[in-house]
Structures are given as structure tokens and as C-alpha cells.
Image (cartoon, rainbow, N blue to C red; front, side, top):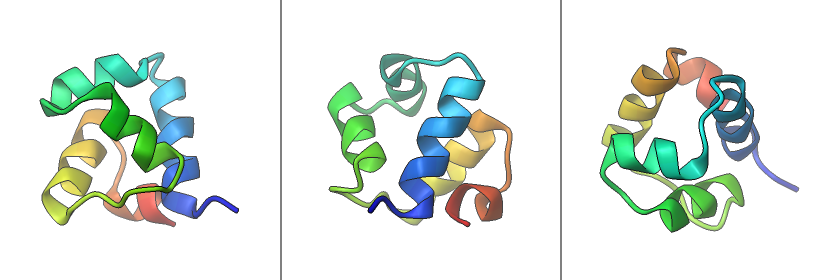
Length: 65
């Protein structure tokens, strides 16, 4: 079962009409890394989590809960 972060990341990314590639480019990481976050096979660090929340225009709390 996916955790809240991975589910929320995918949800908010799609809500903003962004592809994994779009998001990856904004974070200067690979599309595959975004995929690993969304499939819960890899966790992001705190700095990336904060940048994700900024890009998706949501709070960190909304992203992880």
C-alpha cells in the first residue's frame, strides 16, 4: 500500500497538470526519481520535500499527511 506522501505527490502533481518530467525539471532531478517517490520505492530528503511543497503550492503537512 502506498503511503500518504507518494499518493499525495501524484495527486497534487496531476492537479497542477504537470508530468513527472515537468516536476523533475523544476527540481533539477530525473523523471525516474519522481517515479520512485510516487511508487514509494525511495524517500526524498527534507530539502526536496520543502521544494516540492513550494512548487506544488501546498504545505509540507498537506503533502505528507
